[in-house]
Amino acid sequence: MPARKKRFECGHKAFGKICRRCIYLENERLRYQRMQEQKELERRELEAIAKELGVNPAGYRKNVLLKAYNIVKQIREGAPFARFNWRLLKAMGQREIIRIKVDRCHRLIFRVDKMGTKFLELLTHERYNTRLASGGWLD
Picture (spheres, rainbow, N blue to C red):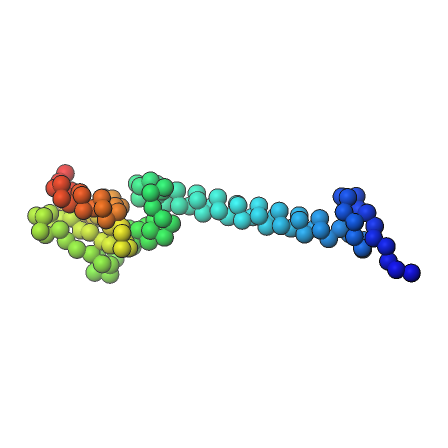
């Protein structure tokens, strides 16, 4: 005698003692929920990093924010500028300003004086060029 399909409480019809379709759907829902929680956690971490750098997180990609944060953190801990792709703004007469390339399109600006090194800002290369042409970082 062949096995018969039965109707489960959920309304699905199948062979067996439990509805595997509902179990699969529940597992997918839980996996999606965990993925959303992970994304929210990453977003909060990026917002905290951007707040510490003093920039708007919406204007920069995740990898740029993380790399800039790591560079600033290493310099605050005493790492030499020679470890990074850096330049002094000698041509502009601002020898105390240092530019570090984060990636192809982003720059970190630092001021070095007797009191130490101070992080000024994170800029795109367009904003960096505009700022440089308009006189630089005169404070």
